[in-house]
Amino acid sequence: MLGCYVEEKGMHSPKSDIPQGTLDLLILQVAALGPIHGYAIAQRLQQVSSDVLQVLQGSLYPALHRLENKGYLKAEWKQSDTGREAKFYNLTAKGRTQLKLETANWTRLAEAVAAVLKLRQGEAL
Image (tube, rainbow, N blue to C red):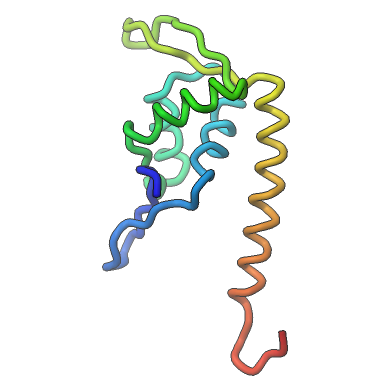
């Protein structure tokens, strides 16, 4: 799986990879909020998820390039808060459409998994 994983706090099990394709959805969601550079995307995901989601650079930057190549993100070099040049990403119109599609698919999948997890022994399917 990808180098984006879920930290399972308070559990003895190892960190879990997130499902394939989820990283793209998360990146598109964060980029939809406005221009942002790669490192800030990883920080935002970690912060918003209370350190549960952690994205490794080796997964983040290839995903950003892939999304840019698909036309979902547009990149522009700008000066960051630290004074260094950084590539800032913006969601394109095509990216907004993809974000809506992926969000709907993820929501449907999450609801289906939740329904199965609510099954109790002896319940009819």
